[in-house]
Image (cartoon, rainbow, N blue to C red; front, side):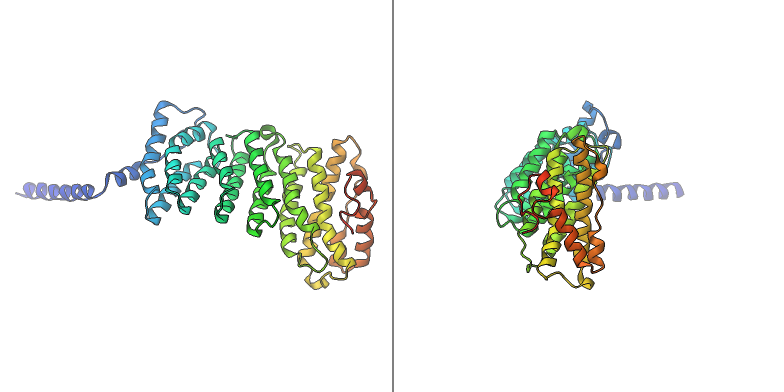
Length: 376
């Protein structure tokens, strides 16, 4: 009798469990077991069984990714992009994953909503493959400003993934993205948020590996100078320089790190652009000192930091340029402009910076800059 009661209780529990399982949809059951092992994500080549794993994983989450329910879509996107995060993701996996997820990306594009477009771009950025590059580049010309900004940010994700992992794109793909961002950032009247996104993405591109990406990192430095320089040169002595100086800080930091990286190459076009950008950054403060509109010493935090970034960039760019031209870099001297401004020694800053950047100066002549580029 005791044995019979035990059997009945066990059977009842089994019925309850079965009932719960029946209440769950097949897709939820599949999702609970759908995962991609690191051995697949990091595989140098994808076997037939691993391809089946990838197809099954994408299929499990695709339906929810297309859901009208924001929470379902968000969870699906997190699951679908997670395998592409971090180091160790192989080129073979990225290529196979791109093929598997292409149907979902097409379905998202067909939906036509802003949300679906952003989801498609998010996947494209994480893939960091030629297919992703094409979609991102196309979206940079979208009529919606938000889509443009997000597309540029996804280009930055492509650059980041390419730098951290074995590249799944070519130097041509990278340069196409850089050129597209360059066109956006140099358009007349470019939106400030879009310009900021461009500077951030190009800053990431300055770390692309020369071994695999050729001159892409140098082209990114040139594009950075093209994006930021005109906004610096266009300031009058009475304009608020804070926005342009903020951009300059980020651009100068990225360009300096790129040029100073001894493991990668920098070409002469990049060193000239970097010299010009460094001079442009310093010239803001120089013109404001000459125009008697420079901030009081107590309010010069941003100006001092930007000038310091500008003179550091100028120093490394001049040294790299001398090296590329087989000249001695010993003649390149560090400047102390930011220290002079921080100490309130405006006269010394004015004299020293004018000698370095004024019309007819060595820098202006050697790099064939317009005579009044920095001081007018």
